[in-house]
Length: 152
Image (cartoon, rainbow, N blue to C red; front, side):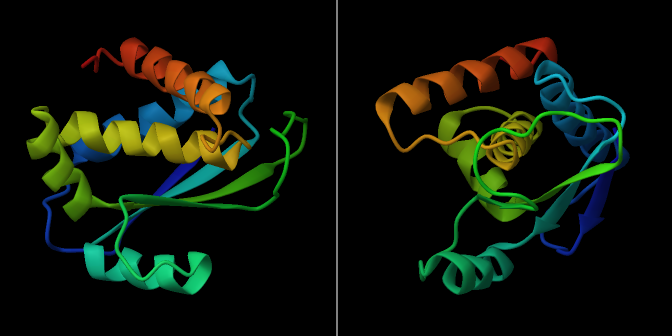
């Protein structure tokens, strides 16, 4: 389960511990959803200005956000297969993660891991537009974070 990590920002310190945690978070989602070693995702760390531009360009929202997912395939959750399966990119604003961690009273690590899990679930087709969808997605997020010992 390759997780490719790119740090395109310099405003929030990124060390091996954070990179390792977010890699494990992404892998835990994939394992929980039945994906094998063929599944690949990318995590891209950016700042607020960068994600603002992406949000404006791809969603028509002229504001920064905390996480965006760019799936290689759209629609229903994907089924794992035997060949290499590139699922897509999860773009995380570490500035937003740091700010939200302070607002919610937990660590940057916990917030960034939550955003990674949330983003990977979006790559797999999960959403939170309706109340039932939101409950399903939130339960899956909390299960994965619990396995990483990152509870609220």
